[in-house]
Length: 328
Image 1 (cartoon, helix red, strand yellow):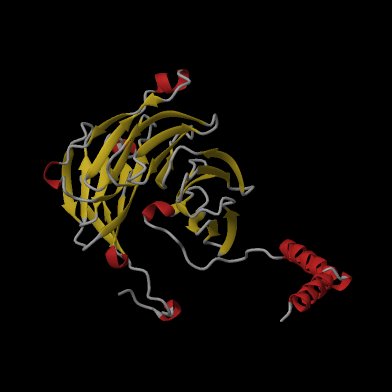
Image 2 (cartoon, helix red, strand yellow):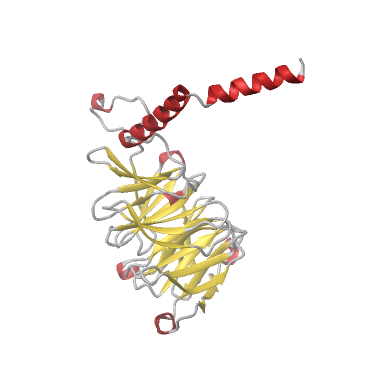
């Protein structure tokens, strides 16, 4: 084809693209997209993207459940089977979350480069605070019982533990941690918190006289738990005691042991859960609930670690529970 012919074709294409009909089509498509954006709403999310037990939380006052699916926080009312959603505008996947003691807020951690710890107001579905002090990802977060502080633990390569006065948007204490941490729990009086993970149980102490008066971040004081012969275990979850057992700290290992640390950080006693794996732990003043493999939940006494019962397993998918008339 001659240069003159190719030039003619280019000219015709340019004139065609400049024609009013093409411009009308483009503007019409843009208007159509804008119209759809105001009409499309997220009604239901199927599934969950939880990397572990730190991405499922329950408000003890209302029973509202919170869990992530990608960059969306699902707030599920199990009584009404209705969902509400909070969208993380950064589009980064949420890895962990926790309710505030009063249930008014949810704190989340996320993955990716320069992840943020964000606080969301549950009723308004709006972000109210943001902290960016981690580099590679946030493995677990927790509110202090007094609601004043948030602790966030980074991924293993992040190596940071931060205590955040979230209403003032300042980090009041921080330190490094070299182990893989998968769980964190505050003491009832907010004076310390405990982290657990791979061959790791550590007690971190807050000096409220320094954190409330000093403007700069102060070093966080940490003391390792005395693990004894269980030092090579993976501690998958941790919960500080409540009520009469507030001086105790309870952990479970992935191999299926329930452990109790005393007020001197010594692993005082443990019991076998008689399960191939243990994944999660919840402690009240009267009971210890241990989530195990195959849907098994063992219940123990926090006073002496005596076994009390095993909860009924959840029914299989597709089972007609209305037809069951006898307990098995």
